[in-house]
Length: 135
Length: 382
Image (cartoon, rainbow over all chains, first blue to last red; front, top):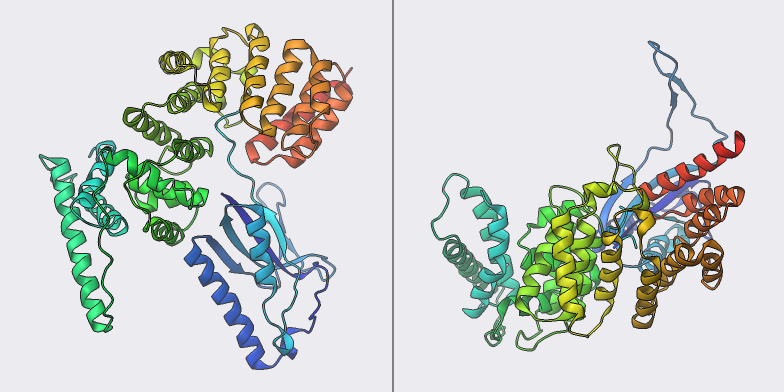
């Protein structure tokens, strides 16, 4: 059993094959895409592999400590930031191969023309608890 | 409220329902309902006969579910009949339950979840919390597992080895939440050992007890890992060690060696050493040689390389390590350790940092980072 993060990027991942901005799709293509994502999550719930799915707003703020007794300093958003996370899905699966298979399926979500996006997803293993048996 | 009692009674209650003719999946759901009801009602109103109470409530829930199901089928105009219940289970019901829940058709995570619920008497919520997944996900995992085994007949003995692998997984995967999975694994293995006479069941129980005995010494007050060599051996649980060693000796005397007995033998040799310096590494290497013969597990070879390094010197350990695939998990950490013992602090520091980067869990990463930092500081201040 291992948890993996499937990370979706607004920016920072290599460009995908079907690289048309979403606002230039037909409205029913947008709906088909959304439905594909929902169905995918529902199927993972049924297989007992779903942990979490969240989407993030594209714009955020950088915040840092400003010293004792002073409010935190905020800055940004920075247009030049290379990497921008769009959202994620967390899965709990038996093998790495299963995680790859699921990421491949999610990447096939339909885009413009109803064709699969072939979107690059980043697959990251969670760090686990240390094992009990050590030698 | 005695939750331990509730868990102990679970497999017997489930077996009683199956004996009365309920199919496994429906019976298991009904028992889970009865457990939740007991958790709710017992604190204020404890029954005199706990097992009788559970069987009565579970049976009522089972009948309710059957009636609801029949009504639903009538509404949906489905004429299909329920399959006839399988034959009554053979001699030892509890043992058959272990086999069923660890059935080879199940994935490891499904077998673990089903075992903890049907044999262990844990609630779906407790299992979900322990494995950090939503309760709905765990519920689905369990009901799919039950569908998978629903056509398995409960009348043939299974393979003890599959059950042992599941129990080992429960023990080894750490624990979260309010359920102590290591203690639960020990309880389930004890119960199995009482139901079946098998040297490897004894071997696994001994292995668990010997590792559990060190638990208090394994983490510092700040939560960081304390490696075996640096543990305060005064904090080891001597009663658990004595029990583990006795069980292991009785198993070994039967001369049917298996991997869990051999692993337990290594743990027993560590437990036997009053200080890390007095560890009998030569004998430990011999046990790892046995383990290598018994299993084709590369992790065993890696552990063997460490033992060789302590028995015959770090150069010998590094030579043993050189024969293994560098992609093995913890290979770099072992290399760092052996290089440090060999006096090559620059290489060791670099390898510890590299090993930290590759560590599969946070506690190990922090530990390896501290090792790298320690060596780097020593080298900065000659």
